[in-house]
Image (cartoon, rainbow over all chains, first blue to last red; front, top):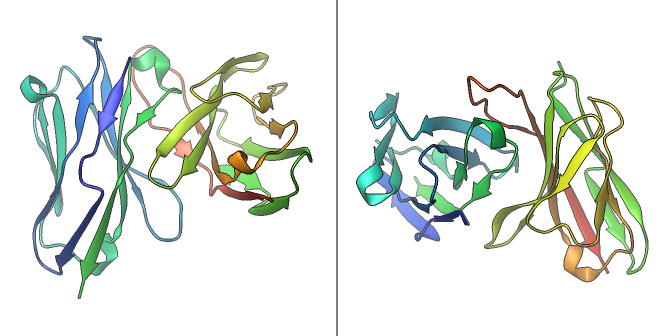
Length: 116
Length: 115
């Protein structure tokens, strides 16, 4: 069975602080894919990143960075110099393999509030 | 492209009523899925389809039916609404490929309240 744990239910920071959102996953598969989605207050789900289990390189996109560590089954997400517009619920998700892309297992989400 | 569209955006039902949530995509995606989102629960998969005529159950299928007669449409039917089905429902679609994993595109959601 697959499982995604986002232990941080809510995080509150002040603008310009760095913040890390934790994601720990469980799977017995050797091939799997990890995702992060953002859900702003408007409610839509916005895709941020995908990572496959064979690629442990960290990724940076502007103020966003992701740290994938297979040894600890973690895929953490860091926002540098947070902004009010980053306020949202962030979901980490897991897919078994390319052929199961339609079946995502989501964590329960972390509500990030960035205060001015 | 309109992407993934869902109707209605809001709906209130009484216990025992039935209704269909509509989902359509114009991206020629083979894969389509329905999720429900409840407070503190994340998103949970209800049903999914890997192509026209093919559907299967997800994690929480009870009380819901689906069919996929065309590539574009994937309606979700509530047979006899119950208060436990009060939730926000998201439809999603994606390309299928054995060589590359595509992300899912989500619709704007339908907020359903069952009284």
